[in-house]
Amino acid sequence: MRTLAIDLGTRRIGLALSDEGGRWATPFEVLTVTDPQHAIAQLLRIIQEQAVGRLVVGLPLNMDDTIGPAARQAAAWGGQLAAQSGKPVVFVDERLSSFEAEQQLNDRKRHGEKLTRRRRKEQQDALAAASFLQQFLDGKIPPVSMPSK
Image (tube, rainbow, N blue to C red; front, side):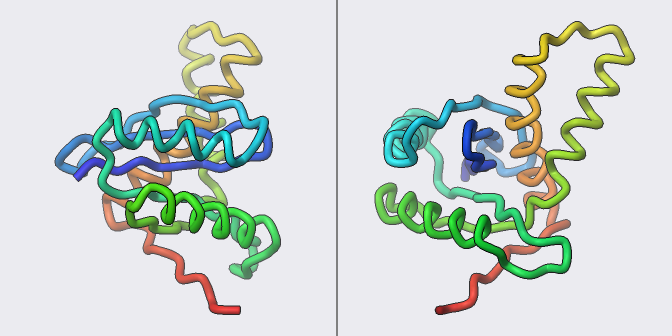
């Protein structure tokens, strides 16, 4: 089953896809966010085109493991996406994924790759999504259960 990982941001949404067997995560695309509902429409198209069977949404938990406003907002948005797509949504802790992605880009720069500032920011979001998706696929991070209100 193919899985789409979503790193939700206020300006950009980083996407990563797994292979059909669910073993490997690959950065896929970065969407520019102007309106959350428009982003859902774009994602519905991608879900259909890429034959996605499951969605993994990163939750920006607080460093003390609590669920703050940003994580609640991401969970509510993920719930809307699940309802509109008909696909199951799994939430995972994505706290350090952006840091890991930034480190990967720094390593690539050290090895001579040229990246513009804009391209670097775009790649960072998709790399972050690929990072937490790969960890999820490998069983290294468990799903996060959202408490009921």
